[in-house]
Image (cartoon, rainbow, N blue to C red; front, top):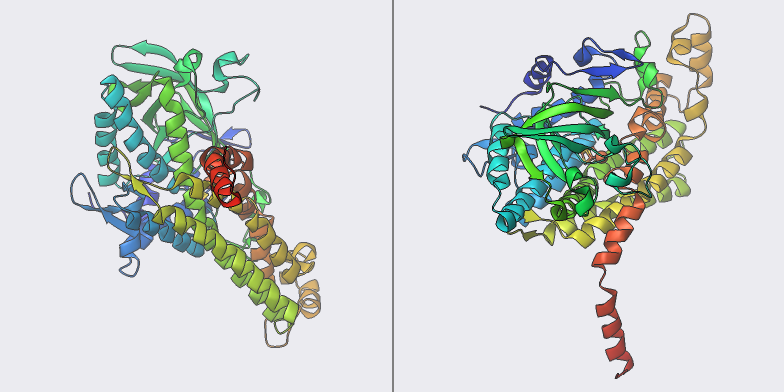
Length: 484
Ligand code: SF4
Ligand code: FE
């Protein structure tokens, strides 16, 4: 099948029969729901740009299965060049949406599954790699969006999956049948899950033998029996329900999405199972997926950062403060921080290497350093953006006030900045900054920078493992002339 357009993607969601709950009720038509639709538009951009000749090289690739042109979001990285293009593609999409466009989790899961299933089969003679290849060919030829799902609710963090009082706090196998398995549990804060055609499930942590029922990986479609989702609410989300809302939304067209995905005894046929009890490979899958996703943040967050830096610069223009040296310096600082993140994304890609299965893996240490920086720099960038924007960003009256017959003129008069710039432009840019720093898009920028792709401590564990302090000690001993 040819690459879908954005519109075809949106229409394809209508046919899925996905079960979605929000505000305590089942949502009848999630595709046109004003709170959900902006997040669908963000994913649609990953389809739309693939048809633009200007971006074709970044947005598409050649299928290793069929030789057909496929969307890069369904591609297995074949070189370090592919890894770099991935980062550039995510930066581009961040620039076009100013939020999380969600489709990367699937791409990162494909690449982790491809190499891990190969190594499991080498050890156990299982058939997971073939299962997975068939599955990915189906996904890429049909240009599907897939929720790469890893994070379990986790309950008591001091206990392993099998030690939890409630066994469902980590997703697990409840029954093995001749034709497949039955699973129960949930995956939490799943990016883009409602906007996905398919869900590719992975374990969330390294496991021991007693947890082997939790060492499971598989794929199911959105309409699988027993599968449903509960929408995660976002700061200022109900502004989208206000009639005629536009300026107050900051980013009217695009948004991110997270949801709780519940598996209430879902059946998975054998040919869609990619790990089933081989517990010692759970850690490999986690490490590889997390590595790819930590690389991703060196692209997407940089693109969103580009928009935020531009918005801050415009706010300064509209305030008449653009020539002040401290404003110029703050914009330099924001750019420096943002480009440092990009350097990390490119570096861990350039240092990539082929796996045993043949696709390319990023440099794990550098990808974890990348994400560790992402847990910090966007906070500095948002602080500087809010500094430049000024307090009006959080004290400005509503769009309705600006449009009201009598007080509207008063608002326009007193909130005007430099002459010649309409007050509404100033409002728009301040609301955009608010949206990215505090509103619905803060989910995909500020707070997601901290917790998405693993909270800061997860990267520090990997940095400790990969940092090779012993080798560094040896270097110091040689220089210091220490002989033992
Ligand atoms: Fe993609 Fe970034 Fe969203 Fe993750 S946070 S899904 S990498 S846009
Ligand atoms: Fe994320």
